[in-house]
Length: 101
Image (tube, rainbow, N blue to C red):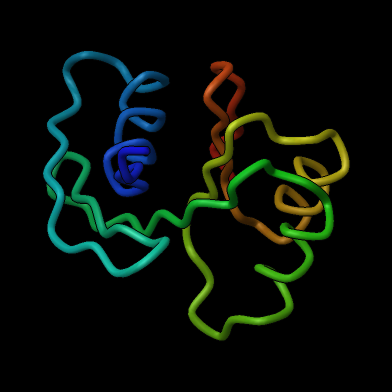
């Protein structure tokens, strides 16, 4: 089974919800996170897998350096609410998104 490139999936999901005029550049990837530049502005993106509430809560509670955006296959309503309340944007591969702050 081929290994899935999480950074590429995250970048693709973010790009899908942005206007085509936004320039995207990947500056660094690290495990489940990738640093992107959107029109020169740094954005830290973290992959949440399935996008369940438990995963969102762990992301919110377990990190001092929270990401700007969380990406998942399909973000659950609870995860969407928790991330939004924490000021973290979210995107899922179905095309749903919230810009966060």
